[in-house]
Image (tube, rainbow over all chains, first blue to last red):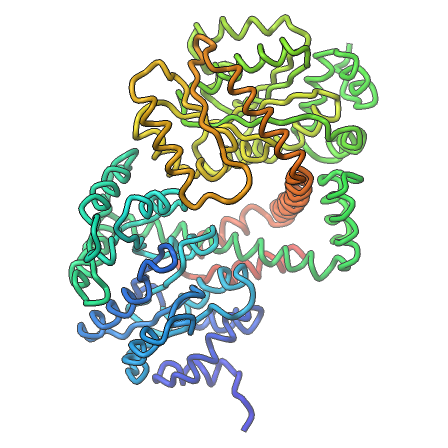
Length: 317
Length: 317
């Protein structure tokens, strides 16, 4: 039988809980272009109800184990949950040690959980561009909770996590980790901070340091709490989820949610437009022209501004 | 007499030290477009010899006073120097208290110093886009030293400063200031760190904290030194300039300079291309169309990806 790639068949299938149809649908959306546009035109109007929670932090901070625990909490509440893992070290993406992988299997047979790994597909820029579309698809299909896990290294990954309704920043005990988080720009984007592996020494100091750093130049409004967890045992997970819920209440009652989502949608439109323009340049300008201009610029034979003008001219032809 | 705006007249004038011709030339370049392209096509091939030093840090850290002191050091060496101030609080931009302004007057009659303020012109995005062109113009005209002062708040300003051959990050004594610098992403971009106002308490702790933070996750190669200064009295300025010189030697002898400048030129070409594409969208798509799509997206009546596709389509018509 031919592989079904018709959204008109896949969308109803996915709605009825067919995980294979869902996976194919997501692949269509991930690939972009007119088919992706058609899927989103169909699903976007029904969306807007999902709560997206982004998790980010340094590799090894325990993001995947936390995600695993949060899945369990959400499922215990009776809600379906989708996970998007944009993290090459995530066990969801197959990049983890055996112990993790075995544990993740707990959710494999649960039809209320859908896990999508994006670690091995394409380059990161493409993944980063596709993630908001995938989240919108899952939202439009009715998943009430969406968890997005990204490694907190590099601008693209950090942006993906900060593009959520609630962003969790995960660190470990130790002075260096909080400072690394600061250096990576994570203090600016966290709505809730998690000191995971809190059975290790130095927890109190890390919590204090984080709070001090967060208070510096803090904006009025939501004050990000610092929660301690031991994801490996499940300790503190209920508190963490309560903090996510509390942030949700704050965002909803303050009206910040409406404003923030509007801004995110407009930013996404502009970013999709720029991606489309870049794509158009790539397909209109012969690769040799591009390479030739780049070489001339790199060798200072041509200034970058006249090179750009020539590319713009080539685009009009 | 009509205001001369012909680059063929302004360029030789600027080369001969006519500061009014230079100012007009820079305005042409700042405004962009074909005239700017013509100026840069003429001047870029003769450039590449200037050393650009970016200064950034929080408002009030003393960047302008440091810049003032560095001008004096450079002039004492016999070199001409150009200053580009992209900082609304800079006395170079007229935003300072009387005392600063009076001091800056020292350089007004020195024909070896050219100061360009960009604080009050256009929006920041435009200034940020124009700054590399202005620096290239000053370089092409033969200024051997170019200082670029920006306030270290906001991505655009930080990018301008990091776009220099040597980037100085200025902080003040006190635990909070270094952490604020970390939060603002300044630890990642500094080649030399300056603890200014070092006559205040807490200097040793700030130097230690900065060094510790810098050592965390440090890359091999250049290890950014931390210099203490009291710009108001001139204390430490010679050490600071020696550090800039030392960074210059490292960059030159390691070959990093060639690589870094090549990357910056290519990045500038791509950024100029994107700016041109954005401009083209703005002039091709009627303002009402744009506003209408934006409103529909913000209100979730239309998804951002189909909105972007419609804009791309409008552009092709």
